[in-house]
Each structure stands twice: as structure tokens, then as C-alpha cells.
Length: 123
Image (tube, rainbow, N blue to C red; front, side, top):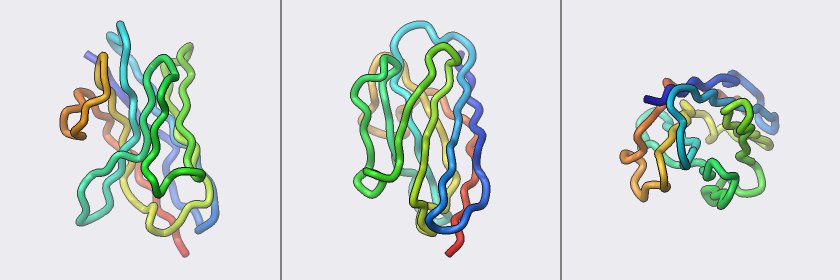
């Protein structure tokens, strides 16, 4: 079993920056796909970025490219999302998730999820 705990959310003005952290614990044996997702009220959950536990193959949604950066500290078992140039439309609950061995095509197939951390961007 893997536990994920997000932190770092909050309120920020448009153009500001935030860094989210996702601390992983439990049986992290093997190779994982780790990702950040978000869900705004009334909208479906969407993938923001993901990366393999080796650090390989980072991927970003188009609207996040150049503004968000995903990284990890394997020694600390922590995943990060550095967000810059935040926009009001980035307001959402942000979640981290993990899945062993590969990155699922469908969001709902990620096995482990955190509880989420809220980000609110004001104009």
C-alpha cells in the first residue's frame, strides 16, 4: 500500500508562483509513474503533469507547458510541482497520484491518490 500526502496549496494572485509537494510512503518497491492532476468545480479531473520514478519522460498538458515543472526527490520520496505565472483558470483542487510500472492511459486507472490540496488564483 502507498500513501500520498499533498501540501503547498493556498491562495495566490495571478502571475504568482507556488510549489506543491507530494510525500509518498509505504511500499514503493519498484518503478512508478507519478502524476499531478487537478479538478475545478464542475469540471472533470485532468492530468497536469507526470513523470516516471526514474525521472524519465516528463509530460505536461499543453496549457501547463512552460509554466509548470514536475520533479522528484527520490531520497525523500517526494514529488513536486513548481507552478509559475499562475492564472485564475488554474484554480482547482490539485492531487498527486501514483501507479506502479507504467503510466495509465486513463486517469481513473491510477492506483494511489492523495487527498488533494486547494489552489486559488485571484485576478
